[in-house]
Image (cartoon, rainbow, N blue to C red; front, side, top):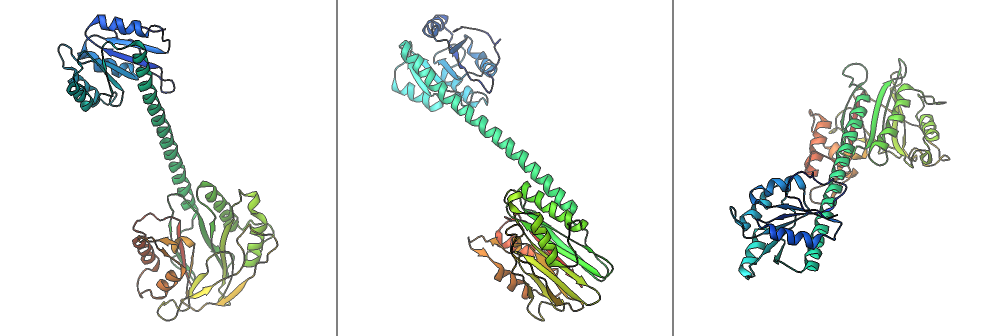
Length: 403
């Protein structure tokens, strides 16, 4: 039922339900009564009346109207000035305003539109026209409110997702091993997760007194799902709990991983991996890879002495195919040699000019690295400069082992 109120007792409309709420601001009670009678039969339209223009802003703040009808000529305050006040007020800045006036001059109408009015009616207009304009402006404003509410909820959801991703990244970082500064094998690494959180993880440990295992894996896709799969595989490797695997045998480790992490059983996700085992006694490095970028071995630790050797494998990614074999290769490791294992996030870099920095560029960069610098820090600074931002599109993961 339509009602006429000259009070501020009604509360604002709920966010999820926007009735057609009209605030009439006019000092003449006879006009208010005429408008009330026009809208009396419209059960969906709620009319509120403010006879004192100095209280109009406060009343609008409480009512949250979807349309404001306002007289142009009132005592105590000029109607155009009140329109400006409504537009300066955050709660009514975008509420549709229909000016009611006895003036028909084009210049007056132009001034009303210039200060923020949405419509102009010479009072009193025809009943059907008044109702149609009220509904038209209210419908547009309600659509805007609903759109804003949807954007707000989306922003909240995105913020929540970002927080969850940040927590997941923090958890992944907590699982990564501490660098090894002393001993027959020294290891250091750099890990910079992307904003989307990729599926990179890595680890290393002594299998026994003679054998040292080192590995790095990269799950397809981004987000929490990729991270969870990465952590599952990482935990199996570092705890040596992969059923039926001899962790001294790289090919056997990859075969057992492939049987355990079938992609159809893990949301169609797969991962690439490079896994190596160094023998102190023989100074041989046995290794195998599943779809992963080749590791780089600097024979005597100096890039200038010789081009880095690629330690490649032709085996498929983990989870792709149960029937394809995995093979172990071996290479002699000289004293002081350095091994670099990395994900594709260190070289698949989109540059500021739109071109891509690729593996050959990365390999050349590593081959010409000046002596006496921290290779990984120098590489990270370089790719950030190429990308034009400290935030990269994928996880940046690189591990350096010195034998």
